[in-house]
Length: 466
Image (cartoon, rainbow, N blue to C red; front, top):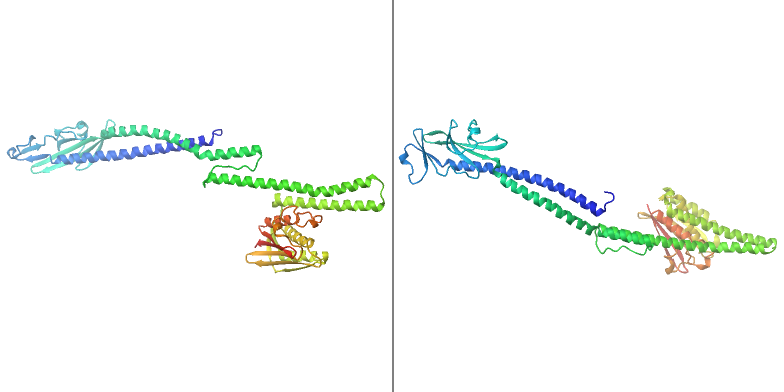
């Protein structure tokens, strides 16, 4: 079974279920039909015997009998019995015979009279008698008319009366039902092939994409809204995400290489220049300071990259807890207000008792990154204002400044890795601060966006769910 195709497996299971249903149907139909047939036989027995009751008449004098009819006459008691001439006819395998009360056969035909002789008469009741493995139904009617007593009509019929019909029906069922199974199995196989064609197309497309490595290819199975089309759409969406992820990682690698190339080149240049000839102590000190500065820049860049990768790939390593955001904002703002870079003033306003479910270290890193960015692009003697407040069912954290601002066309790009809107500051940061902030907000299920006008400042707004 493991080596069979899905189409064959579906067809096999379908066939097994169909055979089972067909067999159950045959048993039920056969049973019901047999019961109906037996009821029909019993009804026919009663109807025949009841009809023959009027075919027997008693006359005290034979001269008063209807002489125009050719009937059978026989002496009985002090008179005569007139029996219709077609009384002996066998009707639908039902035999009717006339008996005396001592079980003496007076008239008619009974193929099993020897076996029924010991069976007591029972008026208007059907009795059963098993003779040589065959079931017989027996129906008696007592005849009561003037001067005649002790006369009985007995009808006998075998259950085999309907055997011919039963055999014919059985033959039809045994022919048509297997034929139905065969036709249905072939139809099911072809239907399964048609229904599974999109899956085969999905498999082939996935194999082609995997073999070529071209994530721009997509699975095309036409329009539709069923589960298979949803599966194909899911694969296409997955391929789109993979393509975006690979493109992002490729760009990340290229950007990281570019960012590391400059400090490495500076360090190598300083080392080579210092080793070419003897330098003064001041020149050596200057070279070492340059190397130290570039080394620190490389170290910070590498640490930021590691933190960024950890947040993207191993987010589960950051423990979530209920964080007091009011206390966190107050603490971070108090410490960073001491920087006073460019004589920028930092003020804040935080509503009391605001808590967010998340990671304290990451939330602290978020706020520090936003404030650091505000310092970096702030103007001399400018200001930074941090606000924390409830806003409906959300918590809003904002960091506003009156610095250089961000052009409208660049506001969606600033959250990309290594992107820096103002090239004049390209040597200051690593270009990962805002992208790190974006990932932290995403990790906490929040949203971040910027409102800015070039030359007038920027406001970064972060919304968290309570």
